[in-house]
Image 1 (cartoon, rainbow, N blue to C red):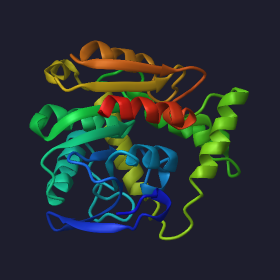
Image 2: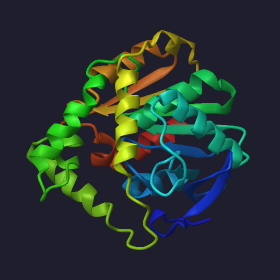
Image 3: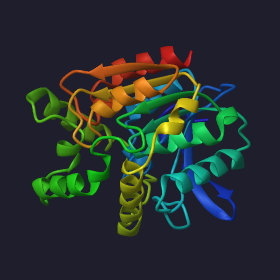
Image 4: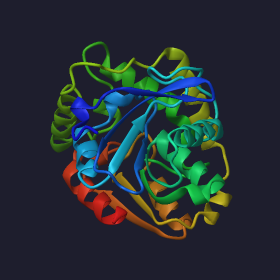
Length: 276
């Protein structure tokens, strides 16, 4: 198994007749950490410092869910269907128990997995995410469109979406985008417009949902975010911590949706401590 995300091989596994693409790195561990990603993201959008940092102590698995990147099939338009596909992927790898790290949309998916398959999950990290029906979540389409408008053809919209517009925030953004370019071969396939539209529909439906059943989640949960998240407003992280029975909350200063990337070293330390 690779010890570097930059060098990790692209692998495939058949999930109900459809090939899902994934990478795995790290130390052999009884319970692997499965990463679930954000809107528009493929394998190459994970910060290698976070993947490598957690893989220093754990087996880490990152994957493209159905219809995303190089995985086959069509992207579903509900978070619940995405969760079913993620559970099927985990089962196809023969895994009986996992830890979950869900970022943004991946955090929504992680919540559904924990509620519907509690015995599959040991611990959960939820970053830049929120509960069903959370404040501002249904507005993601407008937020995304605004960011693409501001970015134009010369800037990456993540500069607006993931990081604050302060000097520190934008410096962290530049460093993060630089790290995403470290892998130069065997790159993943970019998401299609059809996938993005399906994901937006799923997020909008989630934003109009009901989080009442979240109280059934008894797993230990680490909730992390920046203090100025414009994609999934930071108030949602406080609401997650309030609703979850066994949660701890970490809010990073002068940081946005991508706080875990801006403070990757601190986040990795927190995550490793939590997972242990």
